[in-house]
Length: 157
Image 1 (tube, rainbow, N blue to C red):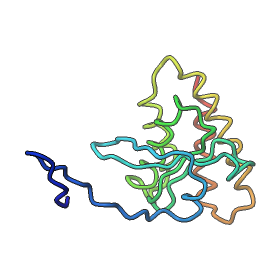
Image 2 (spheres, rainbow, N blue to C red):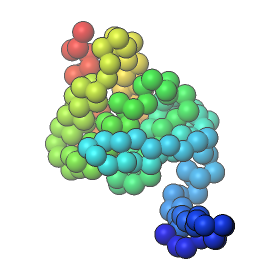
Image 3 (cartoon, helix red, strand yellow):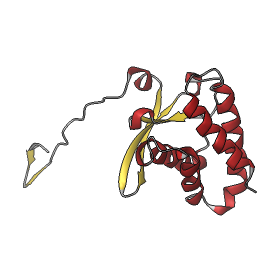
Image 4 (spheres, rainbow, N blue to C red):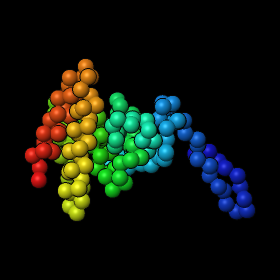
């Protein structure tokens, strides 16, 4: 912190400006910013315009464990568990086989019971669309991960 201006008998401290390192495509499609706490750490995230990926409603990501984002069309009550999924998958379990299913299990562990069925249906639909969205991708590892998560969700009641 740097010293601020003195008014009367107290000093107002001005916060150091922070450098926005987010890519242009995130900054220019920002709807809002917020932060989520997980594991005693705070993670900033950006809510993005749904128009950014119209063929994948409810998109979200944490590419390379940097610049966490989520679509504005994800219902607010569903955002926290999904963001935790991204944090777990792309930081704590980065590169681990089965990371998507494990992140999904942790995501479900923090979800409230009263919205569980509605949430499971939402996530089943999302993973089905995600599989379709990535069907032409050459990232076979990621495709295996999302397919396993979809199958895991299909097995839950």
